[in-house]
Length: 140
Image (cartoon, rainbow, N blue to C red):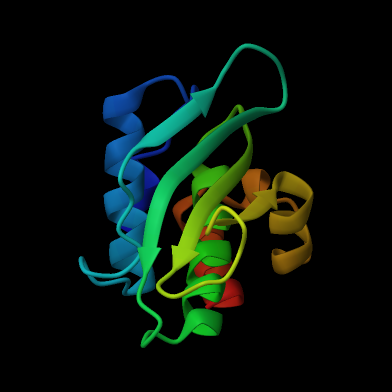
């Protein structure tokens, strides 16, 4: 959690800080390197709410899709908490063998969703190491 706290970032447009936040959040949540692999990201910084989309997340049909969706929600929640101006995180994913017309689904976590998961403001919680630790415990 200390690494996640240290990765706090005022602006989602700082891609090196974004990368540190993702690595720290994945470690805190225990998301292994093979899970939720993204093949690109896209930042929306032209107007509020600012957003971050993980593109082409690959999920094998043999994976537990519900568990991975929960991990996406948790990861989105933590990234919103530690990035001051971030309003939402989206994951564009496809499941092997999906019958969707374009094969992909989007799961979005907004700041309001993150606050609802925690029962309070995640951005306020992330202002102290103890608050961030409490957030991690609440959403895991």
